[in-house]
Amino acid sequence: MAIYVKFFASLKEDIPDALREVDAADAATVSDVWAAATRIADMPAHVVCSVNHSHEQIDHPVKDGDEVAFFPPITGG
Image (tube, rainbow, N blue to C red; front, side):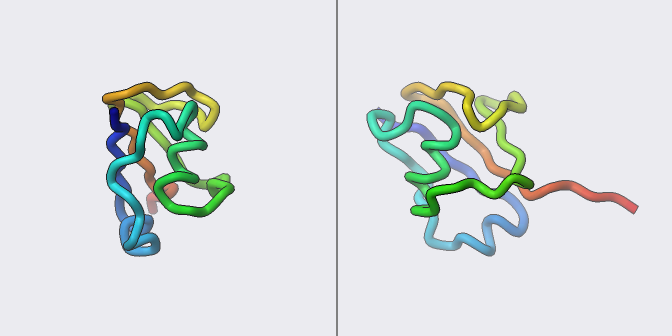
């Protein structure tokens, strides 16, 4: 029973020891996945997240087999 976790861009560099898999029993929401994978209790407000390739909020529920991805904010110029 696992939730698969991906970090992109600067988050991948800033959190190199983050877990890539979280026990589904340890996470009920996206925020819980962040805390379990990074060992950082509060997810920064600027981080964007998705569940199974769909943009979601941090209180979105997760379940066994989900893929949760975290992205830094995107800017353009």
